[in-house]
Length: 223
Image 1 (cartoon, rainbow, N blue to C red):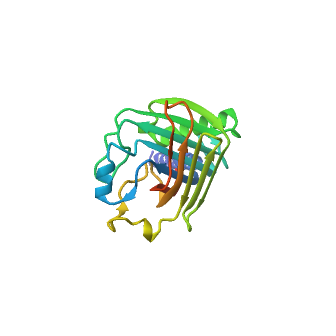
Image 2: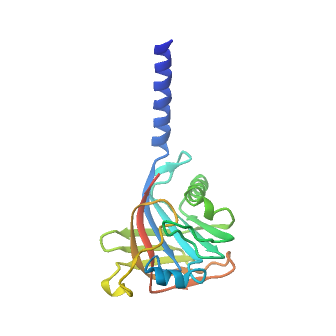
């Protein structure tokens, strides 16, 4: 019986390996918040529960599939609004309170691809997508330059992020660190300066635009 058992286990391992391979998806990630993420503790404490209640998270798939649907070249985004500051300082999560959100999916996607993109976003940000108010299909573009830390995201006329590299002059108290972590699991994350963060949709009940703040992350993702 042992050879049969070994073959069964080997077959199961091969099957699980194939499933893991099929679920693999990689790409670019860009995030910006309405509070400083690269900052000193004193600045972070001053902003707590006053700022950082909004965030924009964006993904661009380089290659891969989700729920067995190929998503190469397509993008998606999540706009989040909460009662308190969103974030996690590596020790304590903030008390965000009630969270509501909007999901944006690439208008170039088919119906199956749009459904897969929504499922991918919800899996990537489970705590932030419990109350999705609307799903919009819009033209989406996302480009990251990880050397110069220039990130550019645009979703029609609804949402936008533009960043640049942090400079020495961006250090105000000389005690700056990456105080908050990205809102989802990513790789190769680097903090950047937000030239513009904007959401101009109506679904959340309010719009926001933020300029000139140390509030962004450029990263990659792999799932």
